[in-house]
Image (cartoon, rainbow, N blue to C red; front, side, top):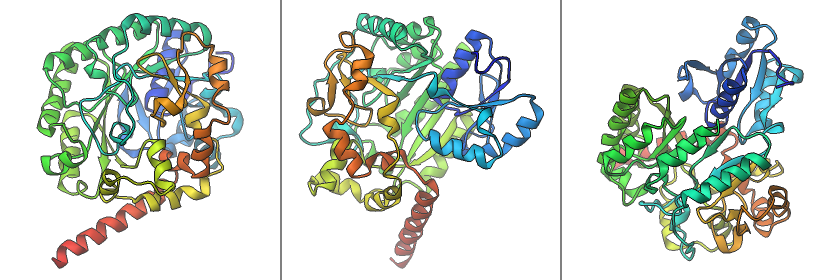
Length: 423
């Protein structure tokens, strides 16, 4: 608060970290002038009445607001953004890294299970059999108490990692608890869920950020990458989410995260984009990749199971090409490790959000028993990290150099179209 003073603040980052800062700003009387984000799909959207603009608008916004400061509120890609601000003529003195004040971003996987078995997800890695379960609400209260006492500045909590949080019958209570602490709450879902009452009970609590993950509009494409789900149910629930938001006057920011594969970038992509536009939801296509670290490590070491090999053929940007794009960035710091604190449903703490196997990646068996400083210390030189950095996995999973990803995706789409025309 001393750093920002009475200056108006422009927040770079229109997803959960930025939304979390907005919650903090409202709580402490700071002035937020608006949001910027390099993702064009978010441009023109509103977050609590504030507009989201592209970075190119920053010089004009700075001219319009005296003493404007730009706050970088993201969990990864901080360094890229600072470099972009310099190119836009924003001096270092006018930039504030939120991570310098909010040193830990917390993710709590309250549901250690999922109703789907997507081939890109950690739940489909052969040989990994993590215990399944749901976090007791009492544990969540103790965890958040410790978090608030120990971490200094906390602005938001994400209630998901690998699991499906809507499977937890107490999800509304978890969101209510977060809001009672003056924090923002984020929830992610595949939305292939029944009954509708479950959705309404969550929307009533107005989660600040609701991410919906999907990968198709029609069953043929969707079923290959979201097995166990029902895309018609997903589409019905999208309408229900809109209805419940209006019914309860919820302030939730809804983003549909569309995973692009070789078989869903034609009419499926077009139709889902149109549906989201009709509903007023942000629609964000992204290039599907391979997770978790354990599966990627096995691939680099020549251990590829049959299910993974079949899935690799669906990728729009092949794993080999993704590795090639990531290679020049292998020396960068891993943001997954440096500022993320992940807590499993059973209170254990994994090394990071992209590791999955509890047997090899657990650095604390109980978050409540180990100090945060000790948990962070245990990340240093962890065997998983050594292999992960060796194979340049962090920049691959962060999707660095999106121009190269887009160029490669365009090439594959054109080649696939040419083959279809020949047939």
